[in-house]
Image (cartoon, rainbow, N blue to C red; front, side, top):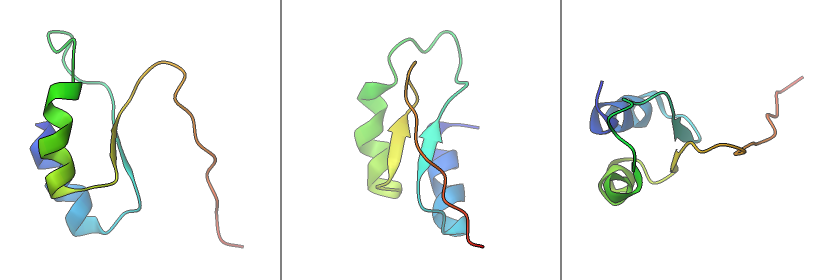
Length: 59
């Protein structure tokens, strides 16, 4: 799946945020693609070492 396909998928799923991870080893710099990805789904991030978040679940 491409970054753009993933962005379309999460947009349709109405999720809160998307982290792009586990991409091809041949893609060493995802950042140049992120502006186009964010045009499709603004809450997108390129995963990097050390990136973390807190998940909140409803009771």
